[in-house]
Length: 292
Length: 294
Ligand code: HEM
Ligand code: SF4
Ligand code: SF4
Ligand code: FES
Image (cartoon, rainbow over all chains, first blue to last red; front, side):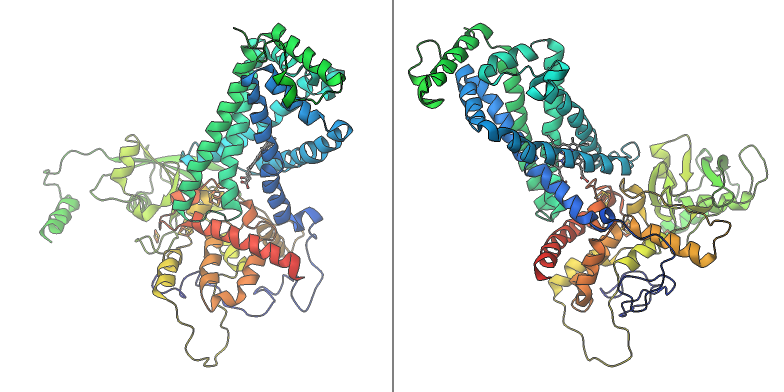
């Protein structure tokens, strides 16, 4: 096909008019509107592009940003019970604001992302069997890990967040952060489920970062996509290390010692001493709370 | 030249027995007698010849019009025209993968599966008969994004704007699209639309309903790429906004899930994912512009 202009489908006549070639079908821009023979589109259909872009954005901000902060915070348990506790105290220093912040910046955006995500999964037709290319495997994994993430997050929230108290969950005690979390994940099967959940979410986020860059047109050339891919892989590896590190840190935690540290920190708070940072320097016992 | 002549000699196979013993080519084809009808498999066997492609196998099957077990059947129907991967009409699922039948070489296919070659019609378009499918939606997508340069009068407007060699280099690969639909067939986000006319429905109403169904669903990578081709063209770019409007309406670029199968199967190696990302960028800018320029 020589020449640039000559490309495209030959059977179509160019039209400058706002009306489409086929006059039986009125279009919105057509100057002679006729009764449409078919149904009108809904609000969701008319704003599909916007909704999908908000979905994409929500994966990064706030949900993805929260994920990064969450995993890195958890990894601080590797620095000992006090270090994790002081971070948890910082989050809980929001007091009564914590719930609205959680709802507005985590739960609602996540629910939105998950709802649109399920819609996307339902409308796709994965075909890795016939086309086992890397990109296609990643496309499929993106959907599989999204669904695992949804199940995992619901379970995780019910198990640890106080919202789960009515169903026998809510095992995380913000005043006893490391010890209560360590007890909750101690059964091997729980740790194993956490490992699967964390790795799924991390893959989903890291791969999502890469596709997001294509969706928004941040990286466009194959070379730029390769570079962005390398960055996404590094992000994924760091987050996976942080997530698994936190699990390892909790499993090797000396729960009694951690609880002693946490009780001491709580007493300090109750005496209205400055929380977090400074307390740990004057702390009498081991600040690590870790086993020997 | 001598080589070619030898080939011909060899190929004519006039019983002089020197040709190495080759097994006949076994083929299984998914057939369908009428649109919307049941599909069924039939097996065939044709003599092997050097440099055969799937079209030449289909021609032999048509001439035989017999299944492997000797049953006389109606010849298999298929589409083809140019026989050199230019017209885009011979797309089929060959050994499970979408490709052009005219450039699918039998020996390579037998290397994939030495027992039998499997041929099916495309799965994302309604079957008309056997391997012939109705690819109207593919062309409708090109209409949706106005994949043309809008010059619709007979006045002499003088010479058009100049296009730099760099622009040409960038555009040329996109201009090679043959509208074969391989990218659509392999795209996990592009799913089949098959409608049938209701008893009380007029032909015009059915056509309108079909068009609405097409227009509400994914335009597909080929059309996104063509939109980028014509938006990059100085004259074609005069209606760039209309193309972006189409690409950001229902079934537009947002339906792409970045599986990148399209670019992997395109017989013309068109950088479709680059076009998709560029369209994504243009759509981002366009959406922001629309928000603030209103
Ligand atoms: C930890 C929570 C989650 C995070 C951080 C997250 C993050 C992301 C990001 C950044 C993207 C990329 C968007 C793009 O390509 O433009 C994405 C895509 C996606 N997410 Fe999530 N996500 C999460 C949970 C979920 C859940 C619960 C589902 C439910 C099934 C889900 C389903 C999807 C799907 C299907 C895609 C692919 C969309 C496409 O490429 O077309 N995600 N996610
Ligand atoms: S990159 Fe987009 S258009 Fe191409 S095959 Fe994947 S989902 Fe389809
Ligand atoms: S983009 Fe490639 S695969 Fe798609 S229709 Fe054009 S030539 Fe065929
Ligand atoms: S016959 Fe034209 S592309 Fe195969």
